[in-house]
Amino acid sequence: MKTHLLRVLRILVSGALLVWVLKQADLQEIASTIAGANFLWIVAAFGVNSAGNLLGAWRWQLLLRSQNRRLPLLNLLGSYLVGLFFNMFLPSTIGGDVVRATSAKKTGGGTLTENLTVVLVERLIGLLATLSLGGLAAISGIAGRIDPRLPWVLAGLLAMALAGLLLALNARVRHLILQLVARVPIAFVRLTVGKMLAAFELFSRARGTLLANYVLSLGFQLLLIVHFWLVQFAFGQTIPFPTYVAIVPLVFCVMLLPISINGLGVRESAFVWFLTRAGMDPASAVALSLSSFAIALVQGIIGSIVHLTRETQTGEPEPEPVTNPESAATGTRTP
Image 1 (cartoon, rainbow, N blue to C red):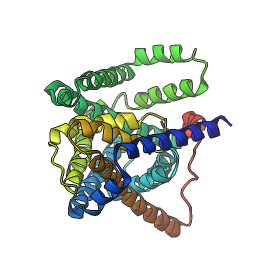
Image 2 (cartoon, rainbow, N blue to C red):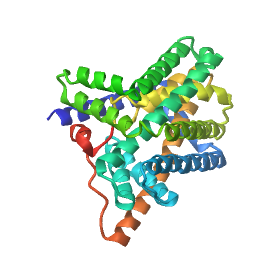
Image 3 (spheres, rainbow, N blue to C red):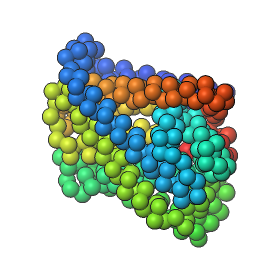
């Protein structure tokens, strides 16, 4: 009952945010903007985003290799796209993470929990890289030109991410945090925090790999930012690239809030809010957001083809995606 209620609330939030977006930009104006787009720019953005997926699979490969599991890059890229497919059509990213981890388990061995832990570490490092770029935008003054409050927000998020990483890598602090969290009455919080700390315990002796993964994550996030920057040209917009370095990390952070269905409505309203302050008209901001979603959708469809091909070849379907976050925290999913 509680899970269903939360899902209904997320649907309502997504709907309310979409209504707000449509009030900022007339639906007919949005349609006209999309109809007049130069789709060659969107194709270019698709190519850059696809290169980012390849880099993401490489990051995953390095983390697995540090745990003595060697998997082919193309195999991991296929699993990465399959994960995108499940993420697109489920109310959370749980299903995609489970499919990715199970695929790695079948090919490279290890337990499901260990493979889920690798995916969790990859996500956490990616988040730190995103916030690092946002912090750079805050320090350079780019964010301040959009809104004087943004540098403080970005700097605060970066400080929290760095503090969390440093604490997670310290064994004594991990033990202290576990003792404190054990007193929290919410089981999901206790299990999730415990899982996150266990993830870094697994990599405590592979700090060189973590550092290399962080550098690759910076490249991964930059490619994602470039892809948004390219999409704008399809609609005749010319906002400078550094502005996107400030905006995109903020949009990603807002999308992490578990208040909507797969970021629907949150993504669009965040882009409208930030991009209009940077000088873009609301219709183009919505069109940019929808175009980036369409790119992700196409990649998810490619992932579905990979998924069906693997099922046909092996005769063994991918695991049934888990959609209960409490069961996920016990070892069947990483947050």
